[in-house]
Image (cartoon, rainbow, N blue to C red; front, side, top):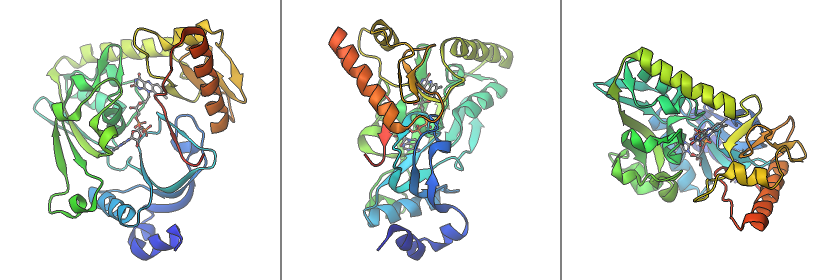
Length: 311
Ligand SMILES: Cc1cc2nc3c(=O)[nH]c(=O)nc-3n(C[C@H](O)[C@H](O)[C@H](O)COP(=O)(O)OP(=O)(O)OC[C@H]3O[C@@H](n4cnc5c(N)ncnc54)[C@H](O)[C@@H]3O)c2cc1C
């Protein structure tokens, strides 16, 4: 049976509520502004709806992908087969004593501003990272020498299997240590766990001082990064002992262009969409840069961004 028919049969109430849609173009949901349609696109409004969608996908062996802010992905021009689950409606934030909690779909920027208003310090480094809380924990996002690991206390998550999702208490808990956070990596990636919520341990501070620190980090970002053009941030991970942008620049690739994708003039670690770039343009440029850097320096550049969808 076709996927849309299966869904109409098993999750009709989620279609009626507008939570499930079909053939939705994904480019507007990515920071690159690139990508074809999702065969099925869902925006659950509760954890129960999320669990129902996951149970359906796993029971029928259908591919699913959790989409946060779409700031670290490149979606195929041909789109994605299966179900894309966007978390943005799961966005509650709370304060308890010096702890701030955020659900997976909360914007990281909003969480940082909420902490600032509450006079809690520790997340200033993150206010300019375009992410959801789920995406930031999944990636152990970081900037200016700080990372999520420095402030994360615990998370709740779902396991991607039917026994766990059908159990009386499907929501599981991870301590800080159990996240195995390292440079742009976490247990969420390795075990395909679904992030639900995290709690961050912060310190009381004058909101004015917090605002100044945030402002200073955001200004540094504006100076160094091509924020006026669509991108997915740093395309490659930082190889040990090297700066990626410098390696690419020394290969003479500043501004190098394939189709409408280009190495940023401002920061060689970014690929920017000059307007109408395709995923194929970006993939060809990534390969070109990897080959050039390897042949000049013998360094393998591994991608930080994730490619999704049909080859
Ligand atoms: C202009 C710009 C600047 C950037 N600067 C930085 C920076 O300074 N530091 C930095 O670290 N990154 C930076 N990035 C990259 C990006 O913002 C981060 O990687 C961010 O953590 C991605 O979060 P997201 O919500 O957009 O995740 P998405 O791109 O939507 O997804 C990324 C991965 O996380 C997974 N995921 C998302 N939510 C969940 C969930 N709830 N459960 C399980 N898996 C989930 C997705 O399945 C996917 O595999 C930048 C990007 C841009 C465009």
